[in-house]
Length: 203
Image (cartoon, rainbow, N blue to C red; front, top):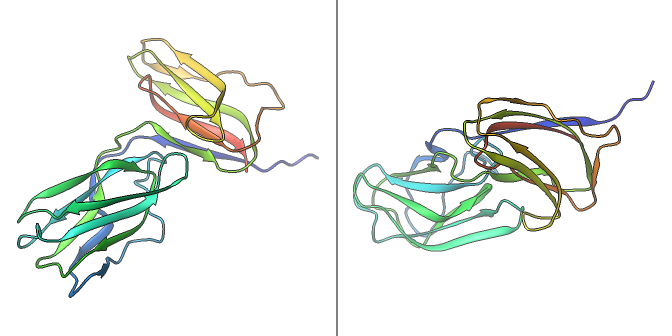
């Protein structure tokens, strides 16, 4: 009997979560916030912008730095983020697939929390190493679009593109038995035409 290591990954937008990266806390000096994990994703497996919310006091005198990775897994840092005023929220310009550090340049006068906006992109990583895409199940929206999976990065060679019409439904395309080989990793953009996509791959 032949047994292969085939895995699946779901790409589906999620709602905002204002403290999924760091729960309510403060600092006495410059340093790092305590994160909820070593590498935090919003749960969608796609990149999204990060929010910093002030729960008490005015934190506009503090600059924040968010570090993590982008939708191609490349290191990403956004610096000079001015802290939020009392009860306010600031949002990063960059979209992060993962967040690994949130640093401040001084004491935080009031407590803050850090989380993600509602998923703000349609891009993510199926598998970062050599793999084969074996299959897909998609749920299409009422907008025409396409799932695209590229080799190596979000700007790499497009090896698979599966269109969908402007109609809600399910998409279960045929992919040849041996799958499609991605030598340098498989990077997905589910596009506006899909509510979700489950990808089956070697990993």
